[in-house]
Image 1: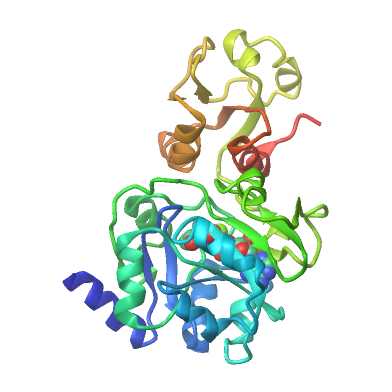
Image 2 (image 1 turned 90 degrees about the vertical axis):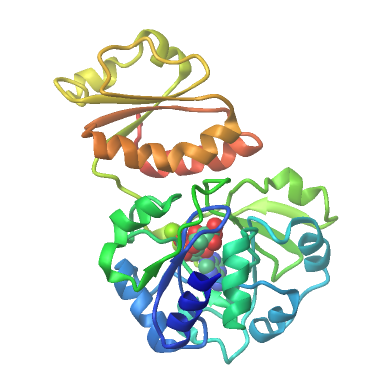
Length: 324
Ligand code: TXA
Ligand code: MG
């Protein structure tokens, strides 16, 4: 609790603090402090056209941020907050435009993590927080990985242990009667559809202005990731394209697989996930580990694009060398 008080004091003075959420670690600043927000963008090296998510601990804080809360929000909030669902709503004028990269909207979520909630309550105000990585890199899911990413450029890192979900929240635009998933996450399209009678769809054009974050390459780890099928991992067949391109030749290889494991040898890093939930939870940590182990080419196993698999494949595709 002392640490949380200290963190809140730093935020009050315009500082930035990294803190845990159930999804990934966030890098927080006071939402109403434009200078602190500007510093946050600078520390991350984040382009100013990529808006931030604002974190609240109490539903009443919505009225500080959102001009109107459509009736469709009620059921979603009841079903999924606190939790990994971010709602895009019309922005109140008092929220600095920089928080929303100049958009008329603002993205808001209530994280399901005791430290995050306590920090917001202690500060008594919402906290704007992007993921606590340098722009273009992997979201950190442990305090150690935040330290590696941002080190001494932040005033404080609150350590809440490893994140239980491991992928960033689902971002859902509810400003019109057609709900639009801007970023898939563990709250799936099916789960959203089960609590609303409105149509739910994925953003068709990832370059659309409505989902600015997706215009930027999401992460480009220093290692090359190649998306492969379970069969390719089992016997190596079908990897000829990459051998032809000399992508694999003489490189330090690693693999992330699901269930069956990998028959390919030799590997200097080999992470086996047991379930889709395990895959989601540990994917980003595994990418950091593979990078630290010196892996040059990482083979990652693809999963069917349904349910939670949609979010996992979304992150894998953003980081991979495509076969096309
Ligand atoms: O799980 C999460 O959401 C984590 C934790 C820390 O809460 N945060 C996170 O923030 O992933 P960040 O900044 O890395 O990603 C925010 C995403 C970006 O894709 C951004 O474009 C989108 O949310 N976003 C933010 N405000 C938006 C808005 N007003 N309209 C559309 N998209 C918005
Ligand atoms: Mg991010």
